[in-house]
Length: 418
Image 1 (tube, rainbow, N blue to C red):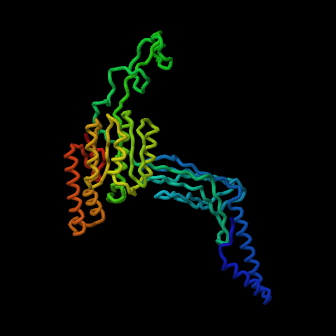
Image 2: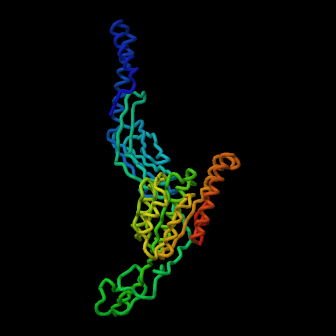
Image 3: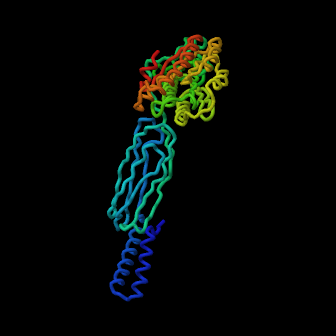
């Protein structure tokens, strides 16, 4: 779309034409002719700017993790016999760090390619709009724009930290280890082979061993691990502390992502409940598909919930069956949410709390802001949190609930230790 951008120049041009024909001065006619030449030439340059131009872009990935780098490759090709004097290329997006644009020129039948790299510093779902190309004349009278390609959605998952020294305790009732008893059904745990017997399914035949021995051999399977995990992540707005990467929201998301990754790698089923804007329950499952579901949910959640953790536990704990483990991630400094956990041990359900101590997060926030924890306002708030947090710890100790304190600014691999 081409528009005249300088209305004042149009007014001056009209006045100049009127003056030239009114006075008959040659000098004014020269200015009129020069103006028509400049405006006409500018129009032709702008009209030619986007003709016979091929353009495109490609992103390196549409699913990434915080800390990864997004690479976008741009290619522009001029198939015309006339050069492109000025082209402005950019991709509008909702990324925290926008994709950098570039102004280039293209010679006749020339091609240019370059790569733009942007670090992904925040989790979430982001939109990358179609490629925008803009050109115009040197005087700024006219402008032409074009949109190339289609927009896409980029999902940035939370950073998944390794926790090699953390183990989920085995639940003795249903076990979390394979047993010497062979399973009648096929499971992912194929452990041995034996000679074929009448009635064995053909899909159990182990062909490499059959070829090597000359006799038909079939696979035997161990029972699968059945100690499932259900994560409860508290995202109620009222209890959150801090801001940025060291806020309770971000640390809670990283804890949930790390534990889910570890449990799934051990072939456990993992369920997830979040108390964000809506109470979301993700049923337990295992495998890569469940991993994607969990990461997609954790990429989108925010600390804007209105449902207290105690309500989420009262509604969600009855869904847990015997032999599961309930893992709670919360910064809530009120002991009311601890009482529902007392009903789990008699039901044969393991429990562990990852407590994001609000005192440590408030202290970290005050220091990061350049303030002192001795200031009256900060000291008073810390004193209140000290009192209620002590009540939470006493309640957890009373019901013998395993607790792991998670402070801000410390790698999870150093905190989550068995």
